[in-house]
Length: 126
Image 1 (spheres, rainbow, N blue to C red):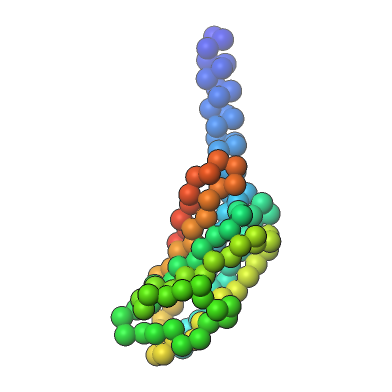
Image 2 (image 1 turned 120 degrees about the horizontal axis):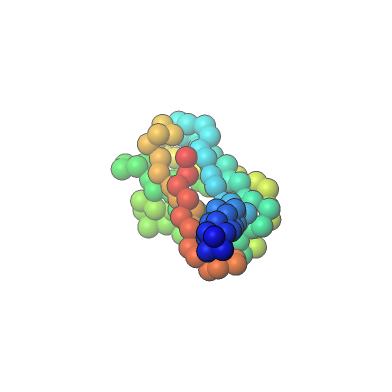
């Protein structure tokens, strides 16, 4: 009976606290707009990571003409932004493309390291 109690307590604590480690430091993004002007609306949870990187993969034949804030680098088909010391809340990346794109053609991701356990997370931009 004592062993059952310990197992139940362990499982309860695991279910309650492990998902919250990811949720409390989450950075997520979603696309808004379409055509030649698209935005990535970022949401940073109350306990932000020390930094995060946003990667935007461009569809074939499409170039990034302008971005605000300016990107940290590009290799032609991948553009990246580095956000150091982010605050909780929201941020926006505005992009202007050389030709119109539908939001469902875009692929991007956000990568960050959990500040408490060091685990790397990758979140897909939706």
